[in-house]
Amino acid sequence: MTDKLEEWLDRTLRELPPRAAPGTLEARVLKEIRRRAAQPWWQRGFAHWPPFARVAFVAMGIAVGAFCSLGSVDAANFRSVLPLAQAMRLVSVASALAAVPTHLVSPVWLTAALAAGALLYVMLFGLGAVAYRTLYFKPLGGG
Amino acid sequence: MFMRAYQDMVFSTAARLAGNDALAEDIAQEVFVRAYEHFGQLRGSPSAGGWLKTVATNLMLNHLTRYRRRWRLFSELESPASDEDSGGAIDFPVPDTLLAELGTEQRRAVIDAALRRLPDHQRVPLVLYHFEELSYEAIAARLHVSLAKVKTDIRRGRAAMLPLLNAAGIDRAHLEN
Image: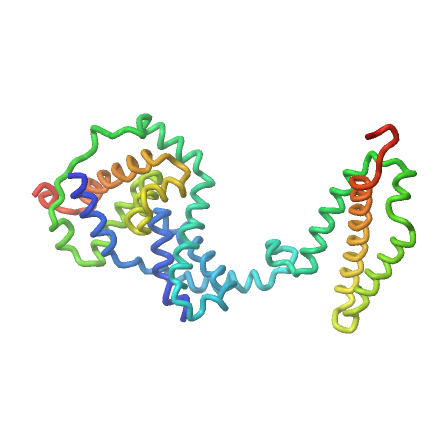
């Protein structure tokens, strides 16, 4: 009897027409689309951020992680991690990249780009330190 | 218009899983907002309907999963031996004429009302099985419950629908004919 019930219910349910959506649905969807379109990018989901902001956010996260892992490096070793000349070169490259779109973007974006450049510099500094410590640095008395 | 072509299907999918029109409308709204974000790919695509249905089902199941602990708790309190066959299942004979006298729209309203009255742990697998045509195994995987529990809940859901249909105005004589 259960098979008969299953068969009957299956047939009956599959034959059912769809329910009519409420008349308010279309207006609600359009209103929500307009509301989301009016939101600034930082209030949207990460997937909707501009590529630049996403890269900067990830870079900042990596930088924070890298700095956390550098807590035990003493000053002498830290200085040797990233020579001054190399650091200056990185800054000049970042500045050059930041200067490219000056005629295309607003000052707000330029400021944000410079801030991102600074963050990227910090990230590279941290990554360089971690890479040196991991690959080349042998602590005194260590193996 | 794209939305008018699919809004009934999307709303029906959400409403049958939710058993709650307000929640179904929220889910349908989110489905179409996401469709708007992918409109370039969906416009003119023959698989747009399938995409919308899948998103509606996933959003609904995600919503229900947030309350899964409460849902499972109630389910297990109600049926501590839920993995075993129920000897007390309602066993109505079901003639082919059941609901046949009702018009299509009346039949839909009566069945939807009966579905709404089922508890979540019976309605959701029942809808996934009969409307979404998922297998028992697929439902168990989607709901993260055992295969035996899915089978038991679906069987009990079916059995529970008959008295609900009867209470909704179906002539008892049809059921026992």
